[in-house]
Image (cartoon, rainbow, N blue to C red; front, side, top):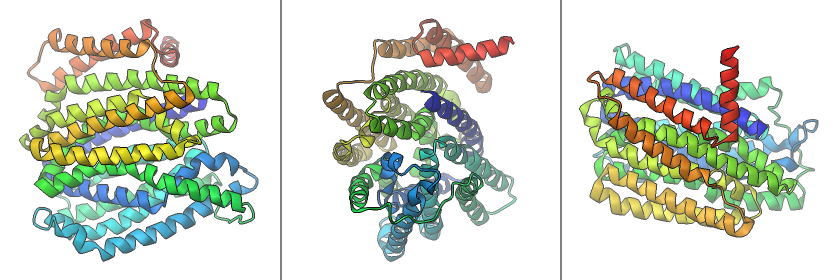
Amino acid sequence: MGIIQQQTIKGTIYSYLGVFIGFISINVIQPHALTTEQVGLNGILLSFSMLFSQFATLGFSGTSRYFPYFRNEEKKHHGYLFLYCVVALIGTAIFITAVCVFKEEIISSKAQKSSLFSQYYWFLIPLIIFTVFFNVFEMYARVLYNAASGRILTEFTKRLFILITILLIYFNLVDFNTFMILWLIANIIPTLLLTARLIRDKQFHLEPNFKFLDKETRTKIIRICIFSLLTASSPVIVDNIDRYIINEKFGLSNTGIYTMALYFATIITLPARSLYSIATTVIAEAWKANDMGAIRSVYKKSSINQIITSTFLFIIIWANVDNIFHFLPPDYQSGKYVIFFIAIGYLIDSSTGINGVIMSTSKYFRYDAMFYVLLIGVTVVCNLILVPIYGITGAAIATAITLFIFNLFRCLFILYVFKMHPFTFKSPYTVLIGIVIYFLSVWIVPHIDNFIIDTIIRTAFITVVYWACIYYLKLSDDINRLLTGYVMKYRK
């Protein structure tokens, strides 16, 4: 897991730097600078732009599994980037047209609840365009074994610019309209920087190579795109359908509260995001070489490593959840159990390792499309049932249920077809250790009135005890090597 470990660690480091910046800007300053409705506006704009931009690539992102056949530095990868850009341009034109034509249909049902959305509706066009091409260039960088660049730009650089814009409105240096323009620019900048990075690395090849695209290659690409259009867009639909339904039923204010709580829960997914970014290319190469041993090894290692890191992050967040809400205005208190249930869902998702990568890069990728149909169906049904009953907490419960069912079916399929599963006897031990340490942090560590000091002490206790247990019980060879390396470096 050399390349995977290196890229994952690098991406994760910048992701957590971004988390710190995001925490200061989005979770500490923004709630005091913007109303819950204004926070909800940003959330719903991003949700729609991400949804449309995923469809706009017309499923071409799925061809990353086929890139090993394009890979040729001397021949500029046979015009792969040119082909991707052409497809993205066509898809973007289609969806921008849809945004313009169906404006009234998109906003009419929420005109009373979301008047701000109507006012800033046209921000969707630049957001969609630049999100589409960021996705194009980020995926291209990933297949070139540079997964960290895209992660750095989204998790760190963009959040740094957003912090600046939030500080400007917090100190009343700009009005809300100017803030929204600056916020839009902050979301555009990563695409420009990633383009510049590809040009600097001499990888920005837009020369076509039509000779390489014989009938067989074209047929394979079209087939992959058809199924990938569903599989690539489904996670975005699932990640955003809850906010859409909340906005429909309760308005932008509740959407803002849900968005804020969601941000804390998604911290758990950061190591997994970095892992998936590079693992796709590595597993695709392993399939090409028919190296089942490598795939099985990465599958198990990814699972135990994700269980360890995700469990740690979960207990840190939940042990400090009451302190977290001291940073926020009282309006956000209703988001407490949103954090809990979504974090549980993400913990389940992370613990199953790279099951999605294995399926999407194998010859059985069509079955993954079927599972995504199931995922969308379960998500919509659960949200429609639970949101009216439990409000925003219902949306979080729906997410947890959906992720459990989805990953269960994936793991069972891989077990049946490939005769492998991600878990070892160490997996339940890790979860048990996490549960015990959580209760120890609640029962043993005294509660201090100053919530900042309480957070620091409680987090330090959990960190020291948890990682000491992980290290001395040797639950992960990769993590032990990493921790040993840090210790040796510190001693020097």
